[in-house]
Image: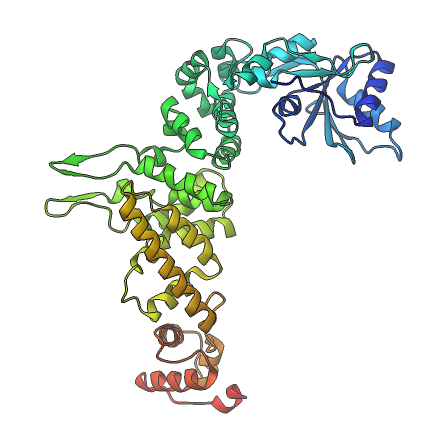
Length: 478
């Protein structure tokens, strides 16, 4: 493991000059130093000074051309200085913290560099690089963080029970760093998470979800979820997912472990470059299987309707986890509801109508849906898996063929509710909705094309069956 070196950026020398003039030592601390050692890109630069962090930020800002605009956060005792060469730099005074058992909010007071490093979550984040003229760029490593980086180990600077009891979110962060970096959690640290897991209940859901999302976005997210499950954290922060774990067997009938299947699907989506919300769809695609599990002696275990129930659960899950309830949630809900549909099309007799309906319902998310469905093929039987993938390729070709012909991703029936009301002189009513639905179904079934003349003729036929007479059609057709 190479010793981290400060990049040749003038801003670091400027900070060193300002710190020397104020007579308060300064250091780059934490994740930026860790990532320098690992050769990873990092945009977050934290500067700790033994003294007033806000005063140092302002002094540095005054030295920059055009005077850097310092953003001060008095409640937190920190300041942010945006720079062109190094992005945002946060300044804070070295501090020590003490906690009460019932609260995660610490009592903070000024401290020494050693006290500041001791309060850090993990040794790999307790590394520093000096910004002082006498030893500029020299590594500060009080807790053997470099050794832990070399051995790929997550370990706390102080006793792990103290670290996790003081700030329980650090248990989630331990799992997150292990998942992001493919590191191991040191045994004593791992055991301490198990002992202290119930303390996670005092942490806000928003902060838990930030860490959960970072685990989901890690290169192999299954590793993080396995750690969450093994420590007992998953059962506390996302019980519905933990319930997927386990296999029930009756006679020769046993279903697969849906927890590990879900993790394999998630890894497959991650490997294919899926974004956060497609990964959430992978996490939730089988979430309702425990609630829909039934055993029938002749056929074994079934999970009928799990896709519909799972889709109905999505808004509640997003609400509980404080995830956004807008477009992202609706997309995840759609993919959960539709994730079995492409598999049902893996037949030689698949009709254009069935393909049209899938394209219509998936809309612009059809490519995401197909990626999820490919990821959902996790059979260990190589021959069976290859057969499914070949069939899937045929389905994708059929989707492409129908899409090019009918343009159903952005499908909108030419007959709108307004046209129906004007045609028959109706007010908004159930009849308008039924007629609109009938036209749409006829288009999807290939009975008529999505053009005004045939669609209007079909509408008039349907209206006649309801005793409705034509009125104002000529104006509409113009």
